[in-house]
Image 1: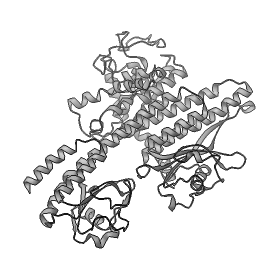
Image 2 (image 1 turned 90 degrees about the vertical axis):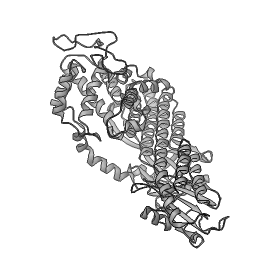
Image 3 (image 1 turned 120 degrees about the horizontal axis):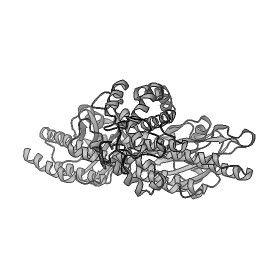
Image 4 (image 1 turned 60 degrees about the vertical axis):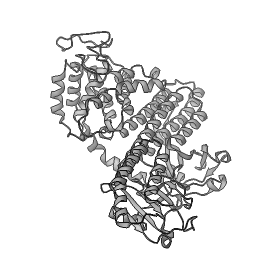
Length: 605
């Protein structure tokens, strides 16, 4: 047994190097079939969202009727028992339980089922998946079951790691695509082309079969299909859903987002669209399109939010349920679609009335901020230990800048405050390029890992440069590059030293602690974001330490002033905190927790 286990271990080390999940799963099944000398095998992986097993691979026979991606409840027969025990089971009469073998649907298979092994793949007490092998030749139960138990324990961490890597790569692809969308949308104002592009991006990023945008008819209240992507979309022209009918009708009338992973079990599902198009809807994620209705003429400037329609994403291609990351991405892009629709109407109205374009300019900025916030959500989801960090740093940075204005130390326009806010949001954008095992490590980093972490400002610049977005963010770029630089030159990534005086800075007092000014010094936005970043990092919880109190951190910041941080910016933060304009993570979470719970309840239909 030891010799066999040693050979299998070497084989596992060879096959887990394959980064293609499909090929990896096939090779794992081939390995198990070889060990057991069986005729067929299947692999299911556990999905924490649906709490089901999802069929990932079938080898040796086509007797499984269900496609890859099919869901299997964990409470069925041998699967339930093997997961409960955490140990493999041997079934001596598999044919008697044909109806209970997931995937066969009770059909007679190509091979005559006789015996079966059911092997749990566990990480401690947490299920990773289940493998089943059929008609094994080796049926020495005691020894073989123990060997398969060891094999399952050996495979589980490799499978879990491969899944995490695949998820990380998918998030990185989504993130880069999102950056690309921003660059593309800045090149045209043609409404329907923009909407079609956005929904095509949604289809690709969410990996769904179809997407659609529905607009409410102001006269009848009916929902009219405006944009559709995916198979059969060309057969949908001027399709209507009666007012308040269907899932889309419920979403538009209630203003609530909805996820339905099995439409046949939902009483609101409207079958008319499927019947007309020939498309089969299995699952839906649906969100309202909200727009700020801007009153012109005598009531010019008055803003009122209204729901103008809804957006749908249909059927995950792999059969998996919609998850939280899908929801965030879809809502963000749907918000941009709503803004585009609103901008189109506003441009027409402004043209007719020959008014200034300030409102449309503000809405364009709103759309841009929406994309930036969407990017931030991706950064925070990649690094859950710092979730909300980017938004807090942005808020703190603006508070510091406003305090500098109040103290008459600088003169910053609202336009510059906007740049500071966006720079704060984007300061950690490069973390998308840092490996998960480094970014999410709960303990102290090694020197090599720290070197990788220190590259994130450079990664951020490269990412935006590749997407041709730096031309839109020349000031924000400084915050991304410089938020870890120090006045004494011991920061990273460039080791910049001293300050680069902004034309708006007065600095006419004595004893700032900053004597050196250089052309290559740190910019004002870089110094502001650096102070905000350190303050939030130290006042936020991390897996390896608890948050420090604001009072403790303010002492640390003052001690670092002049050596690492700009004293002027430190004192501005101190004053902003004193005046109640800066609240730390725990204080903010205490305020928003009730609202967050309400939003989570409304998301599930």
